Each structure stands twice: as structure tokens, then as C-alpha cells.
Image (cartoon, rainbow, N blue to C red; front, side, top):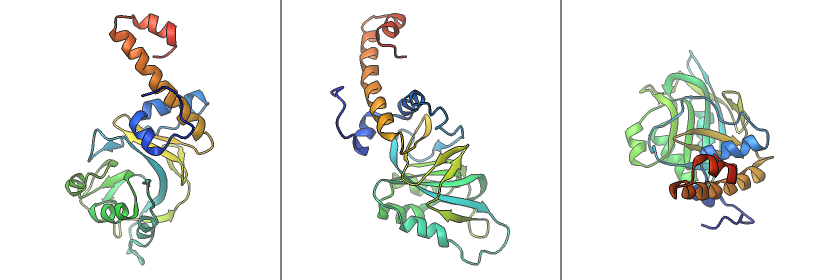
Length: 223
């Protein structure tokens, strides 16, 4: 693929070329050095998938009383999903229940959602794996969320390990982790990551051809 930077780099083009580490490196280059949450969010359904889309956010809280309006806001969030959305569930790492499962996956995917990032637990893992729906989460729990956890706000800035995730931000997730690219630096970061992806290909080919790692770094300044 040509190293020339296209005028427009679409989400699909990003999925074919970029990665979470490349985006982290490009974010470092613009002074955004803490955009990848240091949380144990694992790819539970499709381990070799690169998920790239737009954040749609939900803020969750634990509860210990009967919910007067069960599922209300989480259903609203799911129904509001659009094409290329990634639903981010900020639950503070709570493992109190599986807050995401088969039915929410089905409904959100019908609305255009392409994956979910859950700072907490999910359930129906086998069903979601069969559906080939990317799920990144801390783990699993068989418990239903009703009267255990609930969404308290939607489409607001949320935090994952101190990293702010705002609706519409670019989000990427793969085996290496999660990264949030704020909208104010997105164009520059994506462009820089694109350039580095192609430069790394040249370095890799040179090293495979016998060039030393030191000489390669001296030539291209990439490691």
C-alpha cells in the first residue's frame, strides 16, 4: 500500500492499516501521553480483532435497592446507537453483574454498533462469540444487572483510568489495549499513525534483509 497520506482516512482505512500501539505513538507525538487506560480490558469474543469506531458512552453505578425504572437508560443508549459506534460502559471496574449480554448485543448491532468496551463484567459470552461481536471487558458474571447496577447517564464524558472518553471520540481496541483519540487532535494523530505504519514496514523489510537494528534506527528513527 502506498505511503502517500490520503486527503481523507476513513474508519475502514484505519482498520486496514492502524493499530492501538501506532495510535499511542502518534498521541505521544502531540503531547497526549495518557490516552490508553491501564486497565485489564480483554478481547473476550474476537481476540485477533482491531475495533475502531466512535464512542457512545454510558455511565454505570452499583445499586442495592429495587430499580424503579429497570434498564431505562441502557435501552435508550442502545437504541441511540448509529453506524460505527462503539458503546463504552464506564462501570468503575465493578464485577457485581454482567451488564452487557446477548440481547443488548443484538439490539445495538441492529442500530449500527460495531463493538462494546465494558469497564466491568459481561455475560452470554458464548452467544456473543457466535455473533462475532467484539467485546472488551474485565471479565464475566452470570448475574443480571437488574437491582445490581444501572445506567445513570448517557452520551456524557466518562473516564476509564483517568482517560476521558467523550461521545464522538475515536476509540480503538485490540489485543494490546484500548486507546481514545480526542477529536481536537484526531486528524493529526491519524495522519501521523498512518505515516508511521508505512515507515515501520520499510524498517521491518530492511531488518529482514540483514540491516542491523542500530543502522535501521539511525536511518529512519523508528523502533
